[in-house]
Length: 378
Image (cartoon, rainbow, N blue to C red):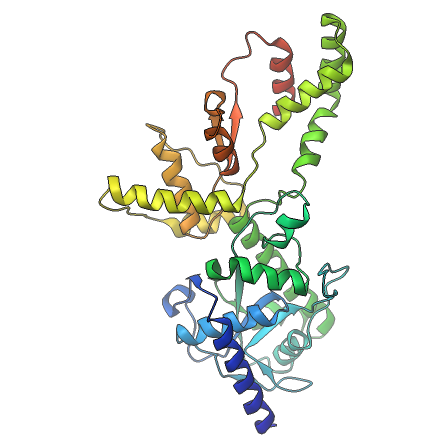
C-alpha cells in the first residue's frame, strides 16, 4: 500500500509540474490566519466536482501556502482518504459534463463514516472554489461555452479547452472551515441523513460562492428579454399602441423587444479583462495608490444576498473603480445603471459588455415606453 501511494504521489507531482508550466493562479484566503485552522485537528479540502486538473491546482496551492493537511491520510472506511476530496463524482462523456443526479464520492462517504465512528475526533473541512477565468455564463453559443468557465458543468474536452484559454487567469478561493463533528452530531444513528446534511451544506456554500464570484446565471438572457415582451402588461401596451397609431402589432412588438434588449446588460469576460488591464494602467497614472478597506465584509454579504452598490458618483471614475476593486478581490463586477446618453457607438457596446444597462432619463415623448418601463420594473 505504501509503495502504491508513493508511486501515485510521484505521478501526481509530475502532472502538477507539467500543469503549472501553463497555469497561473490568483489565490485568496490561503493563510492560517484567514482560515483560522486548529493545528491539532486534521484538515480536509473539498472541491465541488471531480476534476484531476482542479485537484492538482488545489494541492499545489496547499503546498505552496504551507497549509496543514498536504500529506495527511485519514483511516476511514473502504480504505484511506487523502485530505483532498470531491463532493460529487463526474458523470458525463468526453464532450458533455452534465449531471442528472450528483453522486457523492467514496471519499466523501468515508469521511462521514469516520466522523460517526469517531465522535471524540473532529475534522476541519475547508471548501475550496476554483474558477478558470471567472467568466459569467452567456447565451448558449458553442464558442462561448467552450471558452468559459461557467455555471454549466464542463465535459473533459471542454475543460481541456477552458484550461488552454483561461489557465493563466485561474482564481482559487479558500473558505472558512466546517466542523465535521458539529455537522454529523445530530445524526449519530443515521449515516444516510448525516451524508445528506453535509452534502446540502457544502452544496449551498459552493452555490453562494459561485454566484458571488461569477454573478447570476446569465445563460438565458435572450429568454429573459423575450419573457419581458410576453408579460401581460407589455402585451396590452403593444395592442393599445398598435390600435392608436395604426401600426401592425408585429412592428410594435419588435420595438418593444428592442426596448427590452436596451435595458439588459451583456457581460463579456473578454471585455472585463480588457477593461481590467486598461484601468490598472489608468490608476497608476492618475493615483498614487488604491486603499481598500473591509472588502471581506462585502465578500461575505455577497454570498447570501443580492448586493446593491451606491457610490457617491461624483464622476464616472466611481463606478469604474468600484467594479475594478470588486473584480480584483474575487467578486463579480456589478451591473451598472447608465444613462441612455452613454449608449453611443463604440463606447456603448463596451460598457454593455462590462456590465452596464442603459436607462432613459425621460419618457415624455414616448408614453408607451413609459408605461412599459413602469410595468416591467414593477
